[in-house]
Image (cartoon, rainbow, N blue to C red):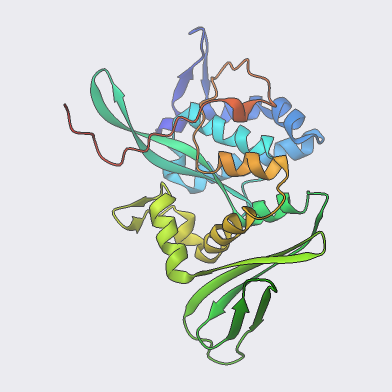
Length: 273
């Protein structure tokens, strides 16, 4: 029996509830957060339970972190499917009773398509474009007093990927950002908690959805020059974080993102002083 299937004590220590039942029991709260009928909440819960069955390591995550990741995605109204968002397992080191122990926890990871969804919720957003540049494509750009970008994909052998670009039309102005393939991958290794010693773990979206994560990286850089909605700002702050939602939580369902990030950034056990 994996950890997610084991019984988890409630805060008052009077009742034991399995994680799948916790998810099922959370449907009323999910419905409130999603602002839709119960059918949307049932679908959301089904996505989580399906991920638990198909990803054994996710099923071993601590229940508190799994619930936290689920409610984080729900508060942002981003289903963890089709590249909008991910709920992924990570090994976090924590000091318990004076000893460093590894605990598998769930983290919310914002997907590229999720940022796109949030972008279009902004009142001044007009259009968003992006592209993956290959060696044999025609690609040129200039940034300055007059922004210029032209990308024509090759129709035969396009060659290896060399760059990514994302452009946004906001208030009649076209703004864009370009990053090389190597810059994107280096950024992922530097900032993603799914990278350890220069390698992404098998469950990392950097392995399964490399183009989407590279485009997400470029879009985040571009977002620094865009008028951002509160929703996008909150989503970026929630990216790759871990929150613990108690089994019997009394926090309002619109305040999940106010809970502290429990992520431990330590990759190795610190040296004892």
